[in-house]
Image (cartoon, rainbow, N blue to C red; front, top):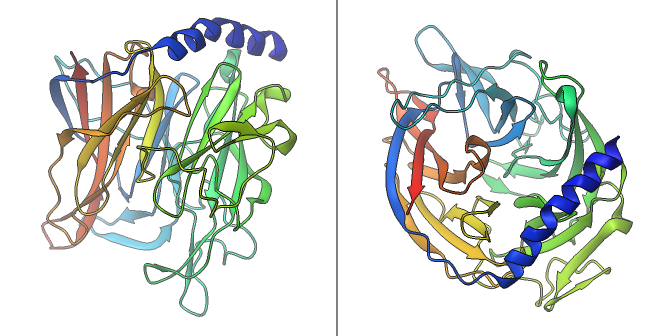
Length: 373
C-alpha cells in the first residue's frame, strides 16, 4: 500500500515538473497583510519555531524553551528544542492568535541530544553547551491514512561557549514516525553525523519534496545554499541511504558528495539565513522566503522554476516590528503548512525578545498572513 501511495504522488506531481521547467521568472506582489497577533504558548517562552503539516494537525518545532512561573518569568531548565501541535489559522476576516499545545508535556528535548552532547539539556561541566537548534522543520516523506506519517530531520551538532561556536559541526539524521493522529511523533537518532564536518549539512537549512525527490538544502561557508536530492524510492521515502543521493555541483547532478568548501556548489541568488522553500501552484515556481538575519525582521522572496534555480534576486516584501529586548528580531520563517496549498497566500513568523512587566526578557513570535496579487 505504501508503494502505491508513493507512486500516485509521483505521477500526480509530474505535470508540476514540466510546468516548473517552462515557468517564466515571477515577481511576487503583496496584495494585503493581516496580523494574527503572536503565537500562544501557554506557560512557555520559546525561541524560533518552524512548522510542518502533520496528520490533521500542524507540527511546530522550536528552539530553546523555558517554563514561565506565575509571575510570567522564565525558569530553568532550558530545553534545547520542543514540539507542539496547532490547528489551522482562522480566516483573515476573523484573525485570532494561534495556540500551540504540547500533549507530551514539558521535559526532555524533542530531538534528543546524543551521548557526547552533555544530555539531557546540553549543559557541560566546563561551562560550554551543546544545542540542538533546528533551522527548519522535518522532511515529511510519507503521509498515509489513520495518521501515519514518516519524516526525517537533519540536525547540526553545535557546541557553544557562550554564543560562540567552538566546533565545525557535523549533522545527524533523526527519524520521526507517527502511527496515529493523537500523540506527538516518536523521534529517534537514525544516523549520528550523517554528514561529516567536512560536508554540507544537506537538509538542515530547507527542504521540499517534489516529483519523486526530497530536495535538501544546506548552508555553504559563504552564506549561500547548496543542494542535494534523494530519490523517494526507499521504504516510506527513507533518507538514511546515501546511495539514493545526488548532489548539484557545477550546474549538474553527480553521485559524488562535494566538500563543504567546494567552490562550485553555491546556488546563485540564494541565502542560508533561516528561510523556507516550498512549491507554489499559483506561480508554477519554487519559492524561497527568508530574511537578512539579526537584528531585523525583513522578509525577502525569491522564485525559481526548478529546485536548483535559476533563483531570482531576492526582493524585500515585508518588514516586521522588532522587540524591545536585547535580541531585537531574527529567525524569519514562512509557513506553507498553514495554507490551503494554492499559493495565493503565505503565513510568516519571526522571533523577538520583549521585556515583560518585571523587565525580564521573553520570546515571542508574531504571526502574519500575506496575500499575493
